Length: 105
Image 1 (cartoon, rainbow, N blue to C red):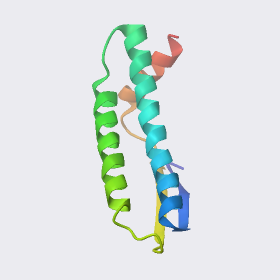
Image 2 (cartoon, rainbow, N blue to C red; image 1 turned 180 degrees about the horizontal axis):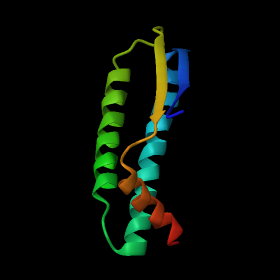
Image 3 (tube, rainbow, N blue to C red; image 1 turned 30 degrees about the vertical axis):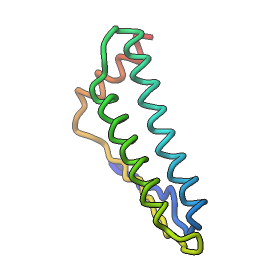
């Protein structure tokens, strides 16, 4: 099997709970990329452009989401569905390069 699908979020939330769930997920991803960037800089003395770009993108998305949520009334409900679709990538060279970073530790 080359694919796997998982439902991460599937429900109706008040704005406060929706903000809590989604903003925490975004914050986790930002921290993940910050740690990866820091680790790569410490071990190899290099910047990781992808991590830097993702931090910027996710930070902007988090800011935009906060602004949007502020427009939602407290008595409104928000339906959130979040699917994760995972597939085996044909980009094996990149995956092998990423794995070598972990092996070299």
